[in-house]
Amino acid sequence: MSADFHLLLFCWVVMAYSSRLGYIILILDWNTPFHIYCCQFRAELVSLRSERDKAVLEADFARDRLNGFTAELEHQRKETNSISLRNAELMHLIVDYERRLREDSDSKQALEENSRNLLMEVSVLKGQKEILVKSENRALDEVRDLTERVHRLQVFFLIDT
Image (cartoon, rainbow, N blue to C red; front, side):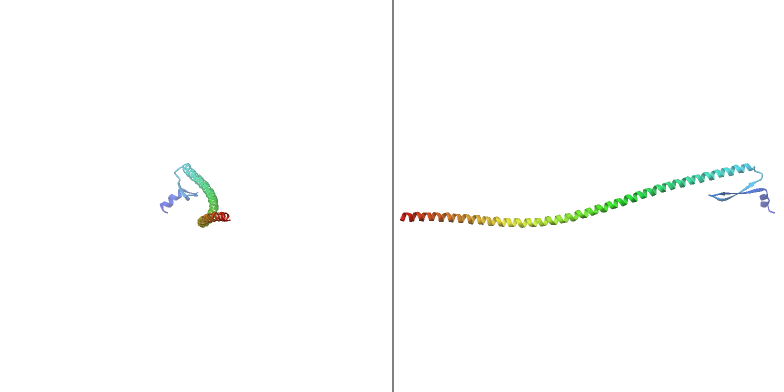
C-alpha cells in the first residue's frame, strides 16, 4: 500500500456544497480537533451565506433599477408619442396656414392687378373728363357767343323795323 493511501485511512473525507464554488472536498486530519474544522466550515458557510445574501440584494437592486428604467422608458415612450401627435397636429396647422397664405397671396396679386387696371381706367377717364370739360367750355363759349350774336341781331332787327 502506498503512503497516500495510509494517510487517507487516518483522515475523514467531508463533502460540502457551495452554489458559487460547486463541490468542495475537505480532507480532515484525525490529529486536528474536529471543532476547529467545524469552526472553519461554519465561518466558510457564514461567508458563503453573506455572499449569497449580498448577491440577492444586488439582484434585487438591479431588478428595482431595471423596473425603474422600464417605467421611465415607458413614460418617455408615451411622452414621445404625445409629442409626435402634437407635432402632426402642428404640421397640419402649418400646412393649412401655408395654403391660406398662398391663397391670400394670389388674391393680393389679383387685387393689385385689378387696382392697376382700375388706376389706368381712372387715368383714362380723367383724360376723357378733361377733354369733356374743355369741350363743354368751348361749347358754352360758342353758345354764349351765339347768344350774344343772336341778341345783337335781334337788337339790329328791332332797330331796323
